Length: 311
Image 1 (tube, one colour):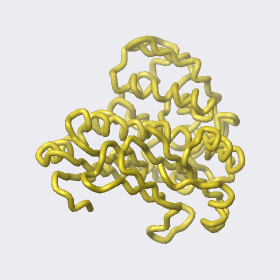
Image 2 (image 1 turned 180 degrees about the vertical axis):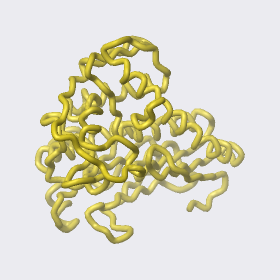
Image 3 (image 1 turned 90 degrees about the vertical axis):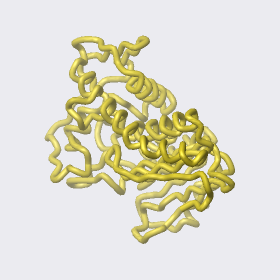
Image 4 (image 1 turned 45 degrees about the vertical axis):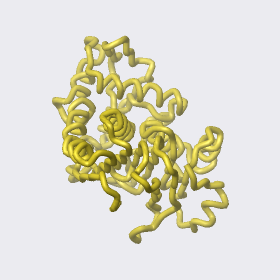
């Protein structure tokens, strides 16, 4: 824990994950911002969660093909991020696959899942072209159901950092389940973000450390090591096949300018697999760590992938 003055932090559960927020700046302000962090995340969940039948997102999905609806600024931010992520990943992130993931058994928050049961057949899904956002009004074509996936966690961390910096903080870290966004500076120190190696079960196993004197970046991981059920099912869906991704990667960790972009790029790389995912990320100049789903040493990973370790 940092020992500098004018610092506060808080931990809580949000979006099905352990959440940590660290704030630097005026002491009273830092403490007050930490006090409202959980409430701000709760407001976002009320707008975005597909696991809550009374969320704004669930209402929008229920009106697909029936009526357009005026949506809140928070949901507009999410829809815009999902549409942009679809463009940036050339469709490897697809926000219209909620019914597919539900049919596979992922219908409730994973912490409450119990036994997941997959349907014998999976529904088809629509293109993101069936999403129309005009000003405040959102219209979905019939058959579309939105699922933000990990994009929601990344965007939530972005929003928290941006809003707290605008409120006067000098540095903010938002960590949602190991996906981290940082802004500003951590007092007189510098940012050090360790990238966990999910292929190794021992504590503190890392692939490397991202270090920077200033914030304005995010580190996000997409992985098939967690949120698994049944006979090899997991939450990463390949839009090209409409079912669970058959990837040769266990983990894709990406550093990008924002949390939602890092999440989108990590998902795309995981779906593409080792060879194509490497090219995809290298073509965009993105710092990354890719771990194959068989046992190899970190030295082999670094040699094969040309891993960079500085933001």
